[in-house]
Image 1 (tube, one colour):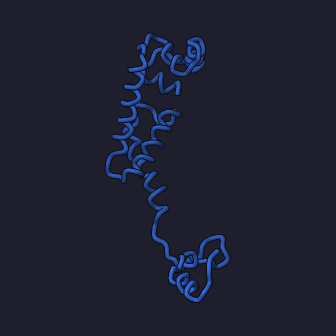
Image 2: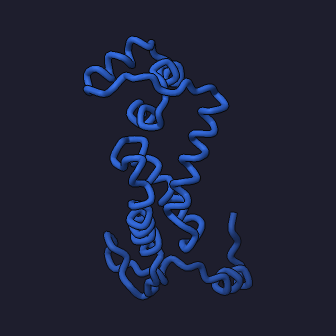
Length: 150
């Protein structure tokens, strides 16, 4: 997260305040990474919200609107996490949008493919999907015959 805030041009003091650490901690981190500590912009809380809204909008736009809403939302969440974790640089968000969208589509959309109710359920001894369906007419017949459910 610290790296992301640095890439968003936040000052050392702004990063420290956002993360709840001392400025010295952030300076030491920058030094250990060999990163430039030149003057960057001071970020108010209002600026923080705006920066994250802009980032979120970029991620959503990178995923696009062609996917079903729920799958697009999952793809956007995965891409945002990759950006926060530093796996996707800020300047490459748009480049990775399609890849994350395709990955989410493969992961979630294929999970709901059609299956036959006559197929055996994995991990069972010959139990089929049709065996799990409730037959309401059988219940009515049992009640007519005097069976009661208590």
